[in-house]
Image 1 (cartoon, rainbow, N blue to C red):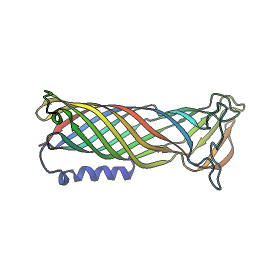
Image 2: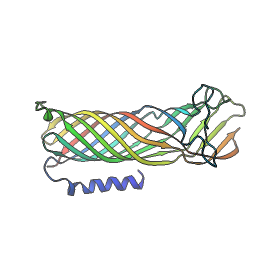
Image 3: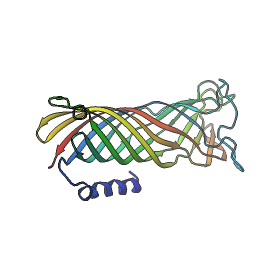
Length: 261
């Protein structure tokens, strides 16, 4: 994690004892597999003043705006949360999460470079925030036995770190033909909604299973110099503006919830 998100997470967890008064306190430790939705990298500004854009305000050979279209693949993350029940039906959590392996793979559509233009870059994601859950059985006065079905939502501070983005042009001559674009680290806000259930294992232990939808904010390349490589040699270094995409995922979570009092 970055120092900022590490500090946020540490402060959230250290402050939990002082801000959570009452019964039903717990720790939750889990893993979550998330699958990204389609993503498109476009210029943050396709006509930046005093600087070139990587893609520009024109359409590619397929009739779409020039960009890089693909997805961020799948990633397995680790979750740690401190929570408490608020009344009969509500509970709240302070949570930190780290994901590695959201690798972007896609295809660009630059003019006169062939139909096959692979694009790839690695991404790491971390977040810290607050989740709120509604126990559906308690809210509707129903007996769900050992189950605790719930709806939840959360707001997070997120950090997405993008590595060097590599554009390949295998249909051009003078191979390898590449363009490398510097990555960047973006900090912003994200949100999620979830549907799941707790399953009672013992009076102090529960198994949590849920599905969730996430908006993890922006993933961006840095404004700066790109390297244009032909035949293995850098033939030009050009300054361009930033590009970016949103990171949105659907996930499945399994966690152990342990009540401490």
